Length: 458
Image (cartoon, rainbow, N blue to C red):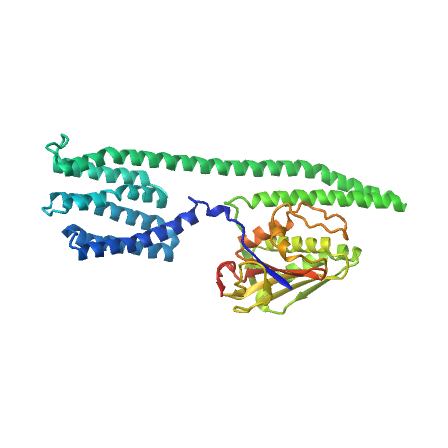
């Protein structure tokens, strides 16, 4: 049996500038800056090139940067304070270093001024990247500090008599405002683009909601009329025609639901609603709702639920779990012509490996924590190993000449993939061509558990 661990979809909310990406970037940037700052200070100290100011303050700045990285890693909501502290500490060091090097009598003072001045534009860029707000204000305050230091050292007229330090300072006064203005413009442009993207997403959702409502209203009237006609017809030909009408109306309603749901999942602001859920009851209800359809196709739909008490007190989004199961069941009914469909609900224990031939690079099948294992196993056509990755892409349907043309939009499994990822779960597929397929959804038992898609044991 071939095994495929479905990789999570590309996360829209992890785009640059989003809160999660900004926190992660701040954590890495401050940590690497702390290490790099300390290494440069250590090399210059051994070479005797550090001034008294650098010898004292650089280790302190390195400690502030390292502490900010640890603070953001330990408490992500401390990010605004940690980013501000690391940026202010760096700005104070740079200005103090320029002043101390200028007034010192050391022969290498020009090297220290030049080596520190070249990092100040990087400080401005880091401020605009890691700080949620106040980056422009802090950059202008830093520049004001440079102006005040210049006026105290050289006075108002531009330096003359070929003083290289004075001319270097004067160059800083001219170039830094351009850097800050450019970064401010880029920041404003990025904010406008982000707001425009969110407005476009909201407009698309409103349009789809309106379109869905306008179509569903006559659709419900059509279904009501079909039911009334069904009460009056007597012949088999007329009844088959009415059944076909009812089936087409149900397909149209399912198409609308899939397209609306898939579009809604693209919204980064869309969130799950975690609450206590009785998973055995949820699974049993979903199976009972599709029993009549399975029997009409000559299939045996079985439900196997483990007697683990934790399953009755799990924490998840019941609406989304039911949607995942319904999509998987409809997919099994669509591609199974004979045999049975088995739904299993159990707890997969941590460090338990499920053996099989893995056909992608994700081979971390052992879990770090106990997880809910919800699987749908059918005896249908099966899936070839090379097609396993394709079926989770939107608008993809597998066709087989031995079955009627597959109905649907091809969004069912794509929606399942995104919902599982939003629930911090993992999706696995085991299949043997001509024998059947098993889809397994692994979800955290509780909302505060580590994400199974990332917290895995090798």
